[in-house]
Image (cartoon, rainbow over all chains, first blue to last red; front, top):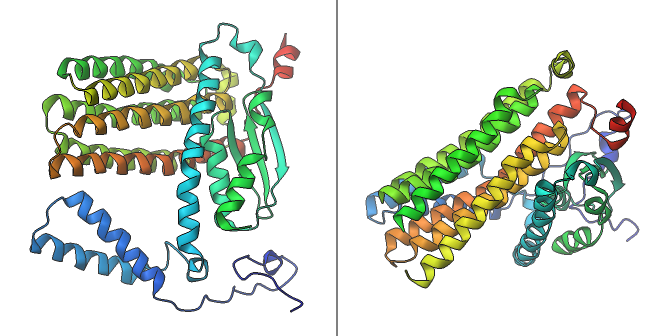
Length: 190
Length: 95
Length: 112
């Protein structure tokens, strides 16, 4: 057990320009992503159509089946699905905290916008930091959370996890990468 | 309740005029893009407000969803198009 | 007016307030990068608040149709919360690649 790397991390050394390109090993075939995609399509269909007679539901089943057959493995990869229910529950628990954080930071930006001496208060700057998150999905959620929290915009995320963030003033950039990174890391179980 | 929605819609339209200033006079192309994006996100809300005023929300909510999608795709396409163009900054300095 | 109406009106008023802040922020901030802060996110928050308010108003009569319409409004909110950071990031990326330098306090004081 020397090499105990979890298989949901991407080996970025494989993409180094000094090696010949090797395509990553295809994930093992599993019906779960297809079932998941079908369920998402079907729920969206039911909400959007609003008609529950046999004809419309049959149309929805056919359409969802076509979408699932052509692009069922795009929404989720099979190797990511292992701890999925727990991850979804933790993500749902993360959302209220994120909403509260968004609201608090929105108030901060509102104060800046309506402040008469706004030009003296703002101090735009670029911040660079290295994240310790290893999972692609976690990095994605983290980058989007940074962008949603007002005062900070993710400008660039390198493939090795270097974030470039534009912050509107000193105070909004200070908390990065603090509590938010820990919480996002807790979602994927790191 | 209808009059509240009506006044909210009128207020929203006035805010859209404010954003239109940035879309028309913005110094760079990307400033105009920001203005257009802001107007689009307000339009999505305004469409549902119009639906509430006319009591046909079930119809207008689909239009709002389509408009939100369209706004997103338009912003993505425009920013992908302009990022290849050098000289976005020249326009700002020319003024 | 019922309780739901009052809650809905308060939410819509809050959303309009955020929208107003976004519009004024777009006008007042000095450069493209800092304008994105009110544009991308105060608008998202305003949309969130106003749409939740309208969904609450629709729940006044609990029929299947109005509940489905409220669900559709929630779907728009979720969609906006996914797409808004992406759109903001696309615009900022275009700016970085076109070589726009961010406005800083030092640059303003140097220009004086």
